[in-house]
Image 1: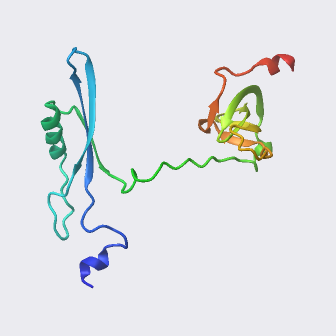
Image 2: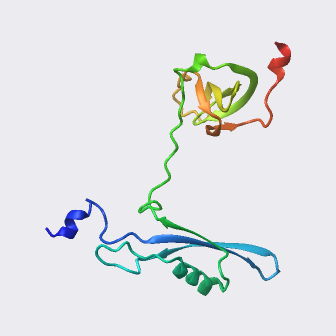
Image 3: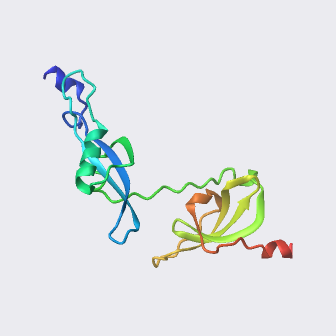
Length: 177
């Protein structure tokens, strides 16, 4: 085994990974309306060799953009690495986090809203002093699959993980209290 193969990690492709540059410009269509053009361009290493850091100039991506659209890019973002195999697999669901251990330590407000949390429908209450957290109370499955499941215990969840059914908080409980 030579020195080059020893440095390369298992599963790593030979050579350097290409770099991606994202070029954007505003153009006008045939009617004269402004149109945003954005495209990513892959640039291979222009200076391959042992011990060299490599060269991935954005000018190559800008030239490819100009050749294709006849407009000079206004913004060029990068360099980025393209994750290999990202387009081949299906997107993974975000794991939803529920904090049940510290549920009693939060002060829950009276404002109530109906919402979905993952595969469950329920209602949620805001938490005093924590605008990014809500208490979620599970009621039923959003899409029952025949076998009835018992609702999980309530917990503290991130507001970004909730899909609200109504647009305004329900203040009817506040009036009755």
